[in-house]
Image (spheres, helix red, strand yellow):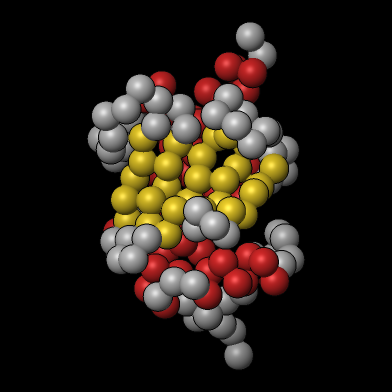
Length: 140
């Protein structure tokens, strides 16, 4: 019997570590589903060449080359009733669909309250744009 989309394994690209499983279990089932969906998209784009950090204390997963503002690309931050997909240099990204929120100098995020509202193509484009921006910035 094939798993439904909500019950399928997190990813076949990487094995789910206990730390990652523990991270997602901290949140409500709906928030966990949203976070896992965002994680799957993000890891497919970034993990072949970048690193991932699970910060249990701050309740977020970050991706990048170094664990600092210059080296980090994006983060997944589950909250009580939503999930933020944040971009450390989001102010530099083109956002034709006007998804990014925030007014700070660099940080921007997209907030998801329901799994059904995730536009997979738009999220993929933002992550790819963030990766491109990161690599161009790192090469300077």
